[in-house]
Length: 458
Image 1 (tube, one colour):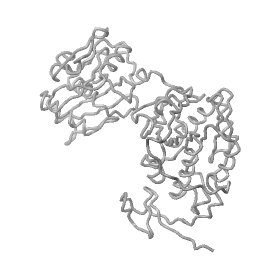
Image 2 (cartoon, one colour; image 1 turned 120 degrees about the vertical axis):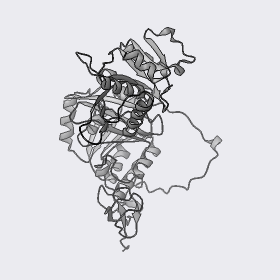
Image 3 (cartoon, rainbow, N blue to C red; image 1 turned 45 degrees about the vertical axis):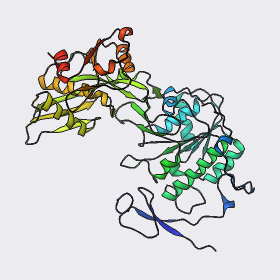
Image 4 (tube, helix red, strand yellow; image 1 turned 180 degrees about the vertical axis):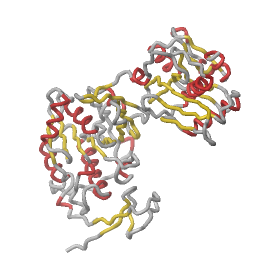
């Protein structure tokens, strides 16, 4: 009888240690090491394609120029938002991991995808819900009839036995933390189990060419539960974000071997499922009956998609000793920098003012092109002078108070024109080589912050 081997794993980052440690040397967390069994069974007892009994020959290296490569077409779904974040569709043989908070809509999204792939044989494997529960959700989605099959199972060995005979064209696993492999003795959801199960599904996807979608749980810090190596192993990592008190959901790409990592998909959660939001700028700009001070519209880019977002600022005299600086959806350090530029270069006395900044719609913006709209909103609130609702901004602000150029200004101007804006302030250095004759919107080139405030607030 083989000796049972155990090891200690950090439940936060997956670091392995032969003995228990109070603090993880990799991530610095305390009391996260848990003892797990690591003695593996014989290879005949499980794994992908181990039941065939045929010994696989050792691989031989090949010259790069001798490798035959044929580009396989991507599988396009009816969900244009998903196609965008995946880089143009589902890549055959890819392993996609979708993470998000409980109840955000991960299972609904994947079931909706499975039900809307006409002519595609889909196997939906659930380790969290019964077949009746999945059927209940499918009836609510009111999706067209498709070749989707449901299986409730948590053993990867049983799943692969079914897969070999069923031969699906798309495999969906809900979720990877509930899967269990007999090759590892520890319980489901542990670091070693998550790593082993992911490795088996990755091997299956690469050898069979079948795309695999996996749902992953997240921790209280917002990261995907399990070892960090899980995100390194998969081809694409998507995060499903949103506030449970609102109906809008954001599907964001954090890793993609087959496309951009800056893409964004927006959905609206309805009783009949997730609805694609084809024009997100309309929901990110609130409808107001009257023009208020402290509100400015900025242009940002998420991947290849231009968006117009509403910047809301509130500036008031501080009633405490230390002025408050608070921002939602915007980097707080960058806000401090812009406030220093406005005080030093613009002459606005903001040192004793409370400043609150909010990006409407729940977005988190990192594009520096909204710097100018942030400054305009702050000054508008400080002077209590409203900015006309037909004016937009698209430029970066430097430490010298200069208005700097941003990338793809033509797309930003076209998006503002499509939404009915009459004027847009941009850096004059962005217009080099740009033909402005084709735009009906009035383009206001500026070089300094003073020119912006004189043109819109005076």
